Length: 52
Image 1: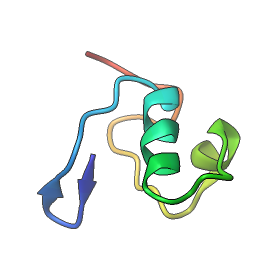
Image 2: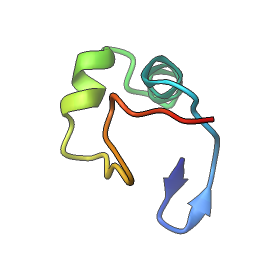
Image 3: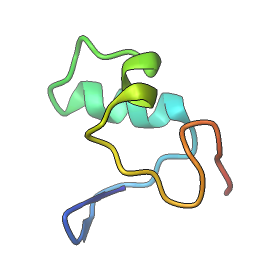
Image 4: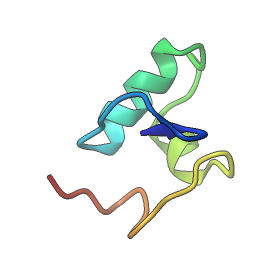
């Protein structure tokens, strides 16, 4: 995951990303909120595509 040009963490699933965002202050967000958010820019897929 990046914020601006800084790599801050690695998420391996939508759940990982959701937990990270909850810990960052978006405590009321669930996986659907994350998947549908216009604040997140997905590259090479979307919230349903995860590769290790």
